[in-house]
Amino acid sequence: MNNTFESLPEEKRKLIIDVSMEEFARNGYEKASTNVIVKKAGISKGILFHYFGNKKNLFLYIIDYAMDVFLEKFYSMDEQVPSDLFDKIIHWGLKKLKLYYELPLVSKLIMKAYINIPDELKEEMSVRYRKIYNENLPLFLNDIDTTKFREGVDKEKAVELIMLCLEGLNGKYIQKFRSDPEAGIPQMDEIFNQMKEYFEILKGGLYGSPQ
Image (cartoon, rainbow, N blue to C red; front, side, top):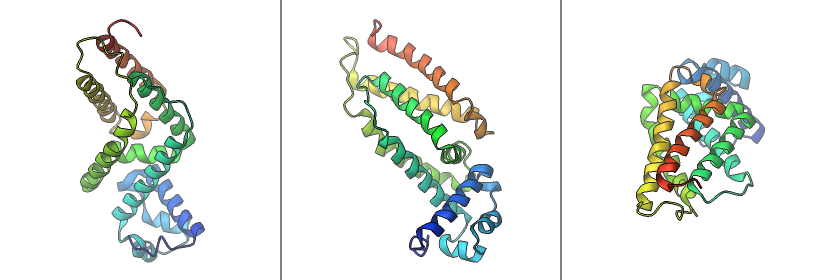
């Protein structure tokens, strides 16, 4: 990206970001039109490509911006975080649900971007996914109470098993809504409740008696 974009007046820069986010969120990467973006932003296509080089770079910039907004809002939510691992998964899930409704455009863009990835973006999106995962996993696992695991359970392997199950469930729903990412948004409450049921079963095996 051309550094000229970052030096633009805040109002103009925000307008370009907002109209780009709206277009990508509504139509996805492949069907989004840079003609629509420049028309709504009141700039020429030549200027847009001067800032970003091409549509792909613009999209990646907007995705990075959207993730920064989402994560900043997520971590700024001042709530008491439980130390129980299963309760923390539920707690973080509820926070994400709240943000899906508080930041509908940002959430819609992120879901479309990570569920239905065009071939030409797979490498860049994979790098971004792993970066987000690696940076946020330690924050998630921080101050976890492992004393509730029943005797004989390897605590480190138990935590790894839980995280693998969580990643597997995420993959399941990504596959389910790959052809129509928007369909997943109205079903977020139902999906969340289904995930709670899975983790209750897992909790019974790792904790033993009900906690």
